[in-house]
Image (cartoon, rainbow, N blue to C red; front, side, top):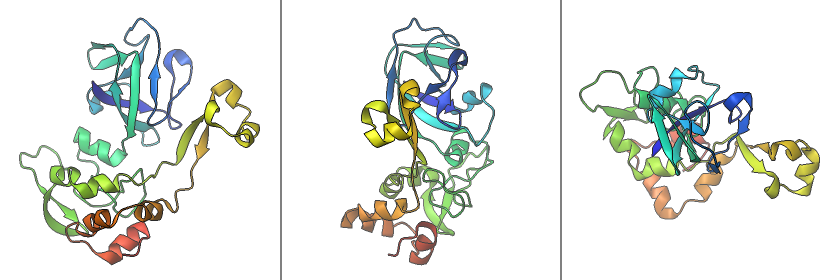
Length: 235
């Protein structure tokens, strides 16, 4: 079962008042008798339902999750004894998912970066629409709907850019230098490593094959100058 989970800004949750550290891509399991609001890893099947329990605060983190073990559900809340933190969901994408109409979806727009999604003007999702409208790409009308864009090879490739500001490093993976610099790992089981993301777009581009670069350059309305302005990549 797939769903959504909201975390504090440092990728922690506070079950029973005790902080529990999570990290993207990791699987967590515990041997407990499941009880909603008491025991288990909690999540919601619908993204909007998460905010019955968390404030709609952009400082929090949101992730797509997958329940890999037993699941019980009460009302709008579920819990499992084994959970996979699949990927981070940007607030722009989240707003599209819950269909509030308060944000712009799209990908790689200028503005503030947030795990691959930017903040200005591409593909406004709107609200209470009955038609699947087309989106703006490179500030021009395109023939693609939002769902078509999100299922495209170009969108998939762009989502591979590693914008993660931090990574959770487990003690078993820490170097001796890291353990010395972060003695708290003996209590926490690891530490939160800050990533330098200034060259993440260029590193992503250099790792693409010729065919993959062609897919990006064949995005409708592609403009090399705007692509450079947003990514820092000269094409």
